Length: 421
Image (cartoon, rainbow, N blue to C red; front, side, top):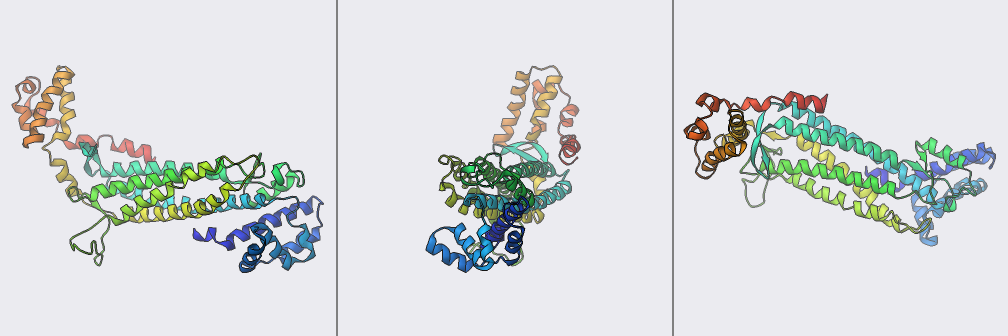
């Protein structure tokens, strides 16, 4: 990913833009065919030389063209015909972001594969679901992971759409009017680079496209963080239902030899903050002056590499965490049983309403026993059987039937079919 943003790749793309434009100009009869051929055959550039020229003239594109001309000779006068710097810079950025997206999509595919594998592994492994961090009703660890799989499937679709939106080419000249370069040249270059012509480029490609792209990266980073936080919570000492892989030689603390910390997931939370921090600058780049200014340029030179490299790393790390995640079904069962069956309170409530009690009376009756278990401990089933109001509507056998936890697996297959097909 880093190589996409290195000067060598950038200058290679710049040259392809210029060379494709010359090919199109030659086809149109605007420049000699021999000139386009010479440009292709003789072109060379040296990064150190470009940097030296730029230090003198303070213009990166002109420095690049000057270095090319030193190798090409007289035919170099046909380079950059009717073009402006933004034609090169903005089209190059589109190519770089498209290259970055190809890697990010591969990263997402790797994470999706890991999530799918582990989801099916724990498809029917019961675990307590939590709302507000408090025990709610059972779910399965597989369903948890299936939810993240669905989320990253959406992330992938968003990135595909954002990449398509960013993949536009501008070869329209000063203020974007095509006064000195025909639209056919832009169409030729766009096709050669796998881009689409920008309908109205004003001299720069409109930055709402870029804002959407970086916003998409920010949303993907937020999904990474949500998954990382789930791992962090499950690894807490009081929970211990899952944890990051801990190698035999690994050390968790410089002071406390017993520590096994979720350091990778914590790192991912921090990386997500960094990727998201680039979204607002990208949005502020949308409001450029008139047909162009360069207030966006410094921003994009930072956020382009940083956001894509950061997210690339985060997705790869998240995949490794999921691949090697240590999962403890016995601990999940212990936590599920910790509150004496309270997780089935809704089933009892519904059974009482089916037996003729009003919902309000049924709620009060179930809550009465539930709060005693919550505050003092004890067996929820036994308290319900001893409650006269409940016993008047439900037999002991019917009460016990509401505590068969396999009931909560009833629709797991349906959920998996919705997610995985």
